[in-house]
Image (cartoon, rainbow, N blue to C red; front, top):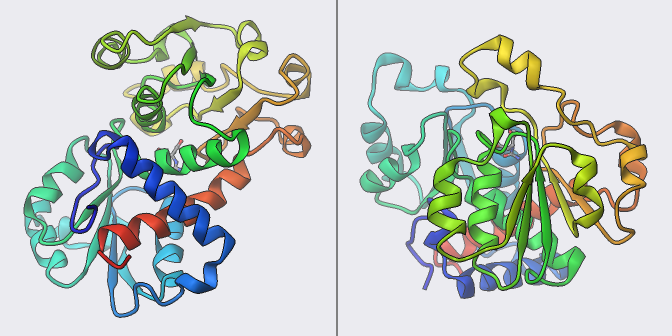
Length: 307
Ligand code: NCD
C-alpha cells in the first residue's frame, strides 16, 4: 500500500513497489487519457529551495495531467525562509493546504526532516548530494523500456560520483536487482563515497570496479550513465575548474561502445556529452526526461491514494 507514504530514498520502496510504479507508468504512456481525472480536486505543493527545470516542471506537468492542481515556489528567496522561518514550520503549514508535497533542498536530510512534520506524503526531489529517488524511478523506467530488464546490466557511471545524488540513488536501487554490475568512471577526487561502497555494494557482494579513463570502460557497458560535475557542491572554484571537463563523450568515443548500449544522463548537460552525440540512436537522455513525467504521474497517483 503506497497511499499516504513518504518517498525520501529509493529504499523506502520495495522492489515490488518500484515495479508496480513502473508498470503503472507504462499503462499511462499507452493510454494517458484514461488517467486525466485521477487526481481531480487534489493539490501538489512543489517547494524548490534549489534550482530545477526538469524535476519541478515534470512534477507539475504530472499533477496537471492527472487533473490535479499545483502550487509552490521555485526559488527560496520568494518563500518565508528568507524571513527566518524554519523548514519544520513551513512544512506544517503547507501540508495542511495540500495532498502531496515535493521538496528540493541543498541540505542533505531536508526531505526526511520535512516528512516528520508533514501531514501529507513528502517526496524528496533531491536533498543536497544525498538522494534523488524520483530521478531513480525515471532511470529505472527508462532502462525497462529501452533494455527490457532491470537485471543483468553492466552499468558505467561516469563523472561526478562523489556529489552526484542521482548516481547514489540509482546505484542503491539497481543493487537490489540480480546480476547487475557497476563500473565507476571518475577522477580520483570525485570517486564514489566510501559509505556507498561499504554500506551498499560490499554487503550485497555486488561486482564493481573503478577506472579513471572512459575509454577503458565504454566497450564493456550496457548502460552509460553520464553526469555533470556538480559545481554548486564544490568548496573551491579552482577544483571545479580543474575537474569540470574531465570527461567529454563524443562520436569518437561512441565508436568504442556496443551497438545496443544506451547513454543516459539526468540532465542538465554542460560539456560532458558533445551535441554531436544527440543524433546517435543510442543517446537516450531526452527520452529519459520524458519518462520522468510519466513515472511521477504514477507515483503521485499512488501516494495520494488516487489509484
Ligand atoms: C540532477 C539533480 O538535480 O541532481 N538533475 C535532475 O534532477 N534531473 C542532476 C544534476 O543536476 O546534475
